Each structure stands twice: as C-alpha cells, then as structure tokens.
Figure (cartoon, rainbow, N blue to C red):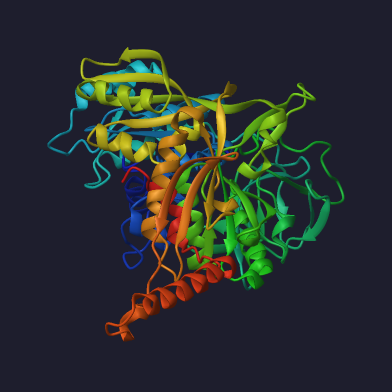
Length: 598
C-alpha cells in the first residue's frame, strides 16, 4: 500500500485539467503512441464538442521514482459549477489533489469552491501553476495569489505547461513525496466505497469503487449495504485506458466490479461494498445527498414511450448520480417525470444525452425551483411546491418562501458596476465586496435561486466580457411575494407553461411570454387569443390572426346582402371551429420562456 497514490485534479473551467491529465498519461507511459489524442479522458461526444468535462474519469498509471515502482490512480474532474457533485465524489475517493490555476486568468470562483471541498476532506493540496508559456501569463502575481489562498510557500507552487510538457516531472515527484499513501487494513473485512457506475448493455452495471479496508477477490460473494443484496464478483479489475481484469484488488486501490446486475436501481453511488459472510457493522459515511437546484418536467414526445423513458433515465442516473426524478402527469403533455438538476447546463446535457445515448425524443417544460407554501388554515405546515400547479388557492394562501443562494462573483474591477446592476435587477442584495488585488474584485450577493435559473450565467458573461466567474451555495428559504402566472390558449389553461414569478416582474414576464408564443405558434383557421393571467385577472393578451379564405371572391358586383350572407356563414363556421379546435404547441414554445430577453 505504501506505493499507491490516489489523487484528483481540481480547477475552474478551462484551466487545463484534461490537458494536464493527457501529459501525465504520456509521461508515465500509460498510453501508446496510437492511443494518443487530446482530452483523452473526455470520451463522450458531447464533452469533445463543447470542450468541457462532464464526467469524472478514473485511470491508473505506473511511475518509477528512485528505483521504486509507484501506482497512481488519477481521477479527472469537471470544472463547471453544475457538475460539482462529480467533484465531491472524486474527492471522497482520494488522499491528494492537484489544484490547477491558469497563470493568465488567476484564481477564479470555482477554484476556491473546489479547494474548500478538498480541504474539508483533509486532502493534501499540490498547487500547480499551469499555462506559464502563454504570452499573457503573469506567473509571479498569480503565485502570490495562490500563496495567499492556501497559505503555502511560493517554492511549493509548481510552474508547468500541460501543452508543452514543462514541469510534468516535478508534478509526478510531488505526488510521490507529498500525497500520503492510503491508510487501511488489508487483513480487515472488505470495505469499499462506490464512487461511480456505468450501464453496459451487454454486461449490466459496471461499478467503480475504492477499497478502504480488506481486499476483493474474483468470484467472491459480496454485499451492497444500501440494498442488502448479495452478488458474486464475476469480474474485477483495474481501470487503465481499457479495463484490465485482475484476480485480487487490495486496500487503498481503485478498480471496477461486474456482478451481472441488470437493474439500474440496485446500485447507488456512495454505497458500501462488503463481504456477505463477514459484513462490516456500518456503511462508510461522508457522502452528502445531492441537492437539486432546478426542476423541470421531461415528457416523451410519444406517450407510449413512457416506460422506455423511465428505463433510460434509470440507466442515465447510474452514470450521473446528481439526476433526481419522480413520475408526474400533466394535462397538456400526458405522463412524464419531474426531474431535479444542479443547473441549466446540467439540464441541457441530460436532454442531449437522452437523445443521443438512448434515442429518446423528449419535451422539456419550463424549469423552475422548489418553493415552500404556507396556508392560513395550518400556518406551521410546509407544503412543498415543485410545480406551479401545486400552489394552493390564493384565497387561503398565507405566504410563500423561496430558496436563496449566496453567490460569489470574481471579476475585473472595470466591470463591477455592470455586475452589480445585473444582480440588483435580479432582486439581489450585496453582502460583501473585497478587492483581492487592485485588478480583481470578489462580490458576494444574496440572490433568489429562481432568478439565476434562466439566463443569469449567460448575461453575467456578457456584461463582464467573459471575465466574471461565478459560484453559489444555498443559504435557506426566505419569504417572498410570489404569484402564479398562467398562460391561456384559446381560453384553455396550459399547465406546462405556468410559472411562479415575483409580483413585481409578473406583468413584464406575462407580456413577453404572450409575445413570444404569438411568434412561435402557427396560425390556424380561427383566431387564437393568448392570455397571461394571475388568478382570474388577465394581465396581457395577444391574438394570432386566423388564416382567412376569401369567400366573397365569386361575387362579382350585385347586392351587398349576398356578400354579407356569405361572410356571416363563414363567421359561424369559424366560431364553431374555435369551440372544437385544439391548438398544437411546438416544442420551441416550451423552451421559449428561457430566452425572454433575447
């Protein structure tokens, strides 16, 4: 065990984690010339297209230092705030972390939040100053920032360039010297932590684990503690670029396990694996439950695909434990699921993955957050409101509480005014303002979560010309003046388009939604009124004009009453049509609400 090192790489988006992982793999000879490619561990199409890491990937390398052979287990992590749950799971399986900071961009919001996660888990931090070869790099100043942040000495910060390979040997030496070897008793009963899993259509569920105590052998009978079910370890092995089967994996090591489980529900991330004959008394603690921030409904386009969608979501949940869902039904869309996501990017990625990996075409409803409602009858009873249709009748509603977050924004001092006015527009209150250097400012705001769900991140990047970085953490519920805005099409309420909105913004948003829908819904043979309403009060209206046929075309001259008669007949037909006609709503209309400011 003293020759094993488990470490992860943490950093803000685009600070060079994946490229650094590539260089480490090259340097240790873990991959051949043929296998080399950029961002090697980002093996999902979506990751390569967008240039972001979505999944954390584990891979094992061997490294010889001072004549001794070491085994490195590297877990590469995502940098985006929406995938922070992946980071927390990777950190739980490691003893050390490489904190990568871009020499041109310096420390950003996500760097700090990931660092705190690592420090809470008592990880040994190795600071790495990446991209020192860039003309815009500012190594001395950024090194001082790192020293101030983590309290290390300036010589402990390793200057490196993942692109050119500079400093890679120093990083590997630092991992051997500074990262502690795993602690654990190889003779104790088996105790292993599941930190990830993936569904293989041919072999069932593949579970990735880190052994804390004991060892696991091929063919051994094991137990999953969350479900209490027993299985045989059909195949175990280590994670190289391809899986490499082994007979035994010992304490401190990371590996994969295939037991032939076909049911996705039977494996839970954060669960403990132990021996069936000699189980340990308690599961491993320290795995926090995921807290979804944004809720949206996902419905199959064809209602018959409901069960297939459920199976796809369960398989996806294996690979992305931060997805939370439960069944729900809607009058407009039929049966579907109410899903919880960590943010808007997460929602987008899940929708894309369902379409690509499982060929499911889905409709996503307007995202919202979870509120607490209190009624006059029972003022102490909390009614959770995940969907606008759950809101009690306004006549006996006492008040509504909405979730607030503490937002940390780090930006250049030139853009402070723009960032402040954006946050104040989003009903935020400033709580702190700190100058980290003369150029860089950290702003702290208390903001309602509902306001950052839609376009906040995009607009923040726009007003700061891409320089602001953003991170948030929940701070609880606060009372708020919220109203439910309903959309009526042709007099019928469309529940999938309802939204809970702050009373001050309700009129503006209702008006914009009507205008947007008018542009998106195709014209019919009859007039379609689009109305936004709060309770029984209509606050905005737009009309989609009917496609008209000129019924008087055949009347050449003659008495006006002939024309009048034909027009009256047409009018009656239109009226009848409007009573029975149903309005088809295109998929873009459900997502249009997100781009109200475009």
